[in-house]
Image 1 (cartoon, rainbow, N blue to C red):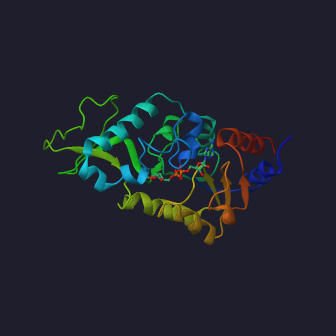
Image 2: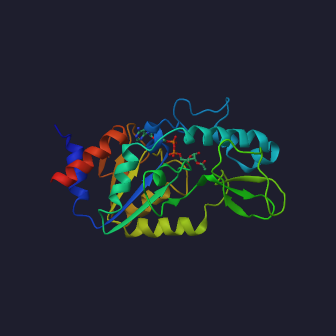
Image 3: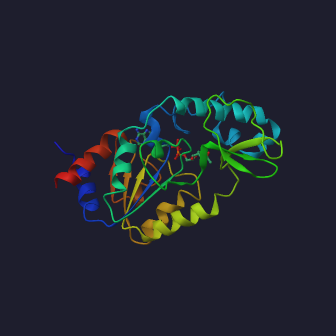
Length: 247
Ligand code: OAD
């Protein structure tokens, strides 16, 4: 039997031309990547805000690199799940498609998504703290901890966005423009508490988009959502996808 919400989500999505997806850590949960605020969200007793921060890196770069290196090693071992797969398939279903993610794990791209707007950067890129040269770094484990810039020899940092830092301006602008234009916004696996990324949902809702939320837990978005799919994304998105293709 198809739950009513799955049916409603499919009815909203099927005729839509401009669709955006906005994802957070929950979309990767079923791949085995821990979320930030759930059980297991602490790292060595520290909250994410105490590790993913410029002050933390200034005080103890090796500690921060250890955290990111663990995440790189963890992600290198896992595979995208059916939620990533459905979102990758949807890029070819709708006339206009934008996928913006707060995740730094690269699993959307591993599932085949193209042109992903990575609002918080990527675990697979590093940037020199001195000359700002940025490069891809896919080697796991890192050959050198902390890694050093080949251009100037200074220390490199993860090319991710930390608390208190600006989001990459071009990426955020593209996500905001898509949020303003979309007819449907599918929000998957985010507690939507971290701004400005979370503000994308209000931008879309204010501009008249229908919001479909996929999250097993009630989130801050419940009031904005036309449909709330309360369950794991890796189970529910494939049901919605099947329903769209059948209906
Ligand atoms: P959170 O850990 O805050 O939220 C993850 C959400 O995913 C929660 O609301 C869960 O209920 C939900 N969830 C768990 N399992 C799920 C599943 N199987 N399917 C769908 N949803 C599931 O992570 P984010 O919202 O991504 O920023 O956090 C946002 C940002 O805060 C992160 O990008 C990171 C963090 O600090 C920076 O590092 C700058």
